[in-house]
Image (cartoon, rainbow, N blue to C red; front, side):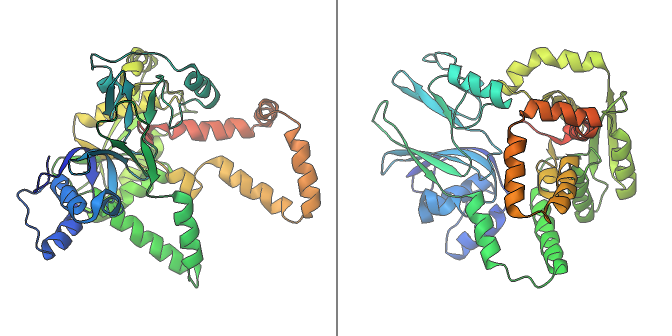
Length: 385
C-alpha cells in the first residue's frame, strides 16, 4: 500500500490494535481516509511523524517494510517483543527480506548455505537467537528495532536503531511509580490487562483462545469472557499420559467461565505424524517440544476460528512455574544469611556443573515436578515467540 502522496510504500504483516484511536487523532488533524484498514492508518502516521515517531505509537504485533521514495531508504521494522519474525540479507547483489525464510528461498538468487556458528548456537540454546539465522548472511531484525538500508548501495551494511527497550521501560516505570499499596498495583494491572485483551479481541473474523488450565491462558480467557457477550471458543490438547495431561484443568476452567470448549486427545501416532512437517513449519531448527502440540492445537482451532489468543509469557510474568515458587522458598531461607557467606556459597555452587545439579534435583524429585509443570503447559506456546 502507498501513502496518499506516494512518498511511502509499505508491506505489512500483523495487526495494530490501537489503530482506531490513532485514526481518530489523525482525522482530528484533518487527514481523510479512503478505507478502514490499519495499514492506511500506519502510513498516515508515518507521513506525519516519520517512521521512528510513528512506530512508537503502534501497539500491536507487526513486521513491516517501508520504502521512503524521497530519501531513497528502506526501513525494516519489528514489533517490541518480536512476535512477528522478520529476516533480511544479501543474495549476491539482491537484498531479500520477508517474514519467513521459505519466502526468501523462492528467489532465484537464493543460496542456502548453513551458518555453522548459528548451528552451534542452536545446539547450545535449543533455538537460534537473533540477530542470527540458520543461513549464512541472513539475519533477524531484533525486537523493538528498525533496520535501514540506503537504496542503490548494493551490499552495504544497514543502520540498526532500537526504538524500544524492555529494560529501560521497566526501569522508567519503577522510577516513576508512586503506588501507596499493593491493592492499587493490582487494580492498575487489572485495568491494563483488560484494556489489552479488549483491543486484541477486535477482529472481523471468528476469534478463539488456546486454553491449558495454567496461569497464563486461564487469565487471558477469563478476561476475554468478561468482555464478550457470548461464550468464548476455547481449545485444548490432551494426552493419555497423566503426567503430561492438563486437559482436565482446562475443562474445569472452561466450565467455570462458561466458554464454548473443544478438546482433542492426541495419540502417540498423531504426534509422531507431525515430526516430518516441522522443518517446513518452523523454517529453522527449533528444539522445544512445544512445537508439536502447538501445531495440533492450532490445527484444531482453525476448524472453528481464524484467530486465537494465547497466554505466552504469562507464567514467566506471574510465577506460574514450580521453579519460581521453589526459588522464593529458597530465598526465604537464604536472605537471613550474611552476604559474604552467600557469596562463598554461590562460588561453591558454581563449582558443580548444571548437569550434575539437574541430576541431583531429579533424584530428590524437584526436577521431575518442575518438568511436568513445564511440559503440561506447552499447548499455550505459539510459533515465533
